[in-house]
Amino acid sequence: MKNFFNFLKSRTFLIQIGLALLVTVVLIFGVLKWLKSTTNHGEFVEVPDFSKLSVMEMRKSVEEAGLRYEVLDSANYDPEYPRFSIITQDPPAGTKVKANRKIYFAVNPSGYKKVTVPNIIQVTKRNASSMLRAVGLEVQRVTYIDQLGKDMVYYIKHKGKDVKPGDKLPKTSKIELICGNGSIPDRAIIRADSE
Image (cartoon, rainbow, N blue to C red; front, side, top):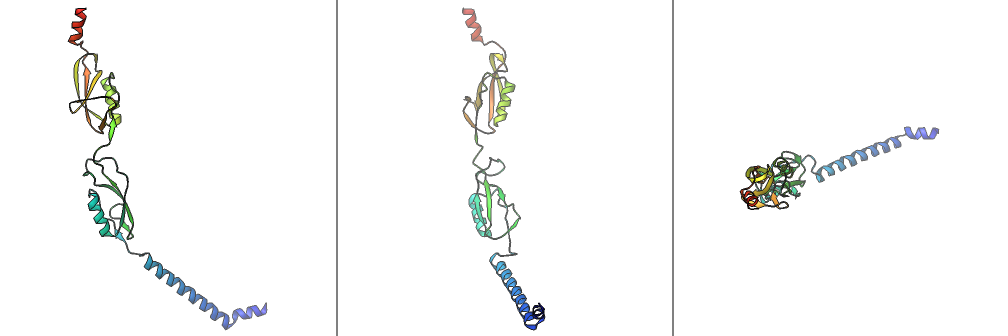
């Protein structure tokens, strides 16, 4: 045991400890320097604002910035953005990222997706309006015709053309409801008289 303590106090042991510490410090310094050079530590690229750019313009800007990109599925149509332009990006504009970072984009489709016209024939105007709103359609106008069912929907029109339940229309389309005014049609009176 005494020999062991004498060895710990010896000059040889202290030199070996000093050399081990020196090698460790040099190795750590070398590894940090290597990591800094290979990971571009401290070198960042600011993500440009790609909103409202076309896909072609976006590709060019991404390459110039030294970044990569991926286009995700198209988002819901937004009328405030041009068709086929960038609506959202992740990470957002102004974020500092490493070179070659992938940016994710959502592109504005060419128009609203189509929705199915619900069956609102023989439904009251009020309920029909609610059913249309629920699928994303709007009632633009209500026209009344001589039919016994007051405020009952008899026909549906879009841009002056007849529409049937189950037809597909772009979301936010404006619909005209043709409803009864509560009057008996003249031909019904004529038929009743003739019998």
